[in-house]
Image (cartoon, rainbow, N blue to C red; front, side, top):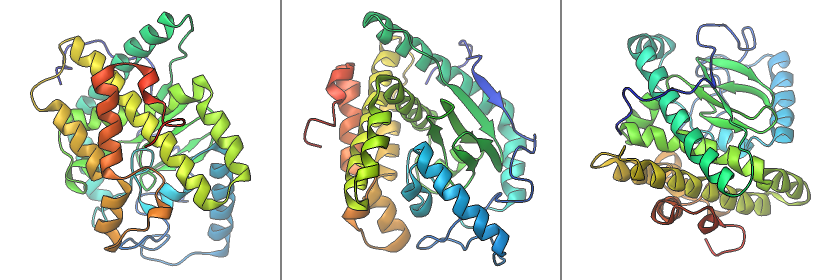
Length: 310
């Protein structure tokens, strides 16, 4: 992607090194156990106080619309885990080496999403409220509870902010075999896609409806929401190509990223088998298909996963 020298967004909130976490609470590596994962609290056990805090956080996140299943499963898009053998010192050194360039890259990609969605909303006679993207390291506070390196990137509808840990792109490349700047750009565009869903009413309706659903029904509806965000990322990529910003291989990088973080692929990698009823982001094939639909059409109405077969 030809991003160097382009306008960066002013909607970046850089909290790296600010100590904005929960003061000794959940930091790097502190996450719930998943198949092939690590135990809560890293190497040690849990105190009663920590367990109580996790329960409170669980319900706060659930009320704010953060996909709890993703956090537990090391899922994709809105929530991607970290490699088991990645230590705090390793991730910090990686941050130090490329933090400025990464911030510039994220800022430019966010600015490009602003240009595209401002234009689309204007054509429809609406105003686009631009989201803020929060860069952090380790853990930080969010209106939906907390964000940590264990949850991966996610969008919080309560404060209309995208949360991105600075080590995520290294994780995407090394753990999920999805290298390339446009693979990273796809993930940012996916999270911005959730913001678009929030503005047009899809997320509020989903969060209201799933209070009446059982877990299986909620997972199935979550898949449709996530695939729509993939499609919106494809719409953004369509306009990015129209501006001449894509390079050879960029689209394939995004499609590969979509494939690598599909629910079936992730479950095979982490536990050796798949449980379809637990899917909440979509299969690799579905994620590739819906990104491609958005990219080929460049139209929001091609992304209606709620009323069409997926």
